[in-house]
Length: 353
Image (cartoon, rainbow, N blue to C red; front, side, top):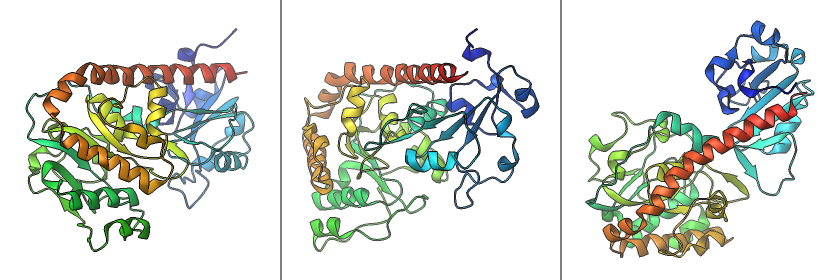
């Protein structure tokens, strides 16, 4: 008789079971899980590697060989090869893997499934709101996060273009995940003689509009409603903006949930992934062909031209025109989350033998 996903009880020492579509009542202790007719454990990856943040010596003592199926979870963007090579060191033979990033040049593996974890997990912490004010004092918001090459590029462009006063902009030095401590040459060469202003917080950003009284790394998972409600569109600098790894983080998901118009600085083809998922982007009001440009600096430059273009448009009228599309994207985000959840559940059941 085929198993039903909602009838399963699983062992999960952390949150990972929820990434696989299990509800909290389905998570049980080790003894209870091993007493089930079909024994399933849900584990993080890399728990045996001391150089990884998932390292946990207690997990190394778990009798995973006694389970019929082990579900591994990676919420970052490691390659399938690195992940599978590690799984092969655990002694687990019947396993499935959930990944949150896609290396576009890697071959598919029938044991691996993709789910945009960061895009969906933030929905648990941010209930939907209907905010759509008709008066907003600033053109855009650009919350740059940890320091990275494409974010230096955007900040330098904002300085050079004179647009800083048109938006709410932050580029803070308090976040973990800095990848650079100076502007790379290929970007610096675009702005000869211009020194990056870093760190930076717009002087017109009222602290009361922040998502927390004290800013720290946890703010990335919270929707900045008070800032959104004072700006017409978003300038989004994704986690990854070069290379061949697609990561759908919380940044665009915030815009989709909050019904935002946006320009994105990301890898080539980023917007096309979202269109393939059924979202509607804005190629009729800005030139989104930048998304197909493979040269990083050229792509970023062409994307910034769209920021300037939007700043020259009648933004209140434009947002009213786009509201049906923004509503569609909001609802599509929740529908996609349910579709991916269903895919995960079916993936588990189809491999449970």
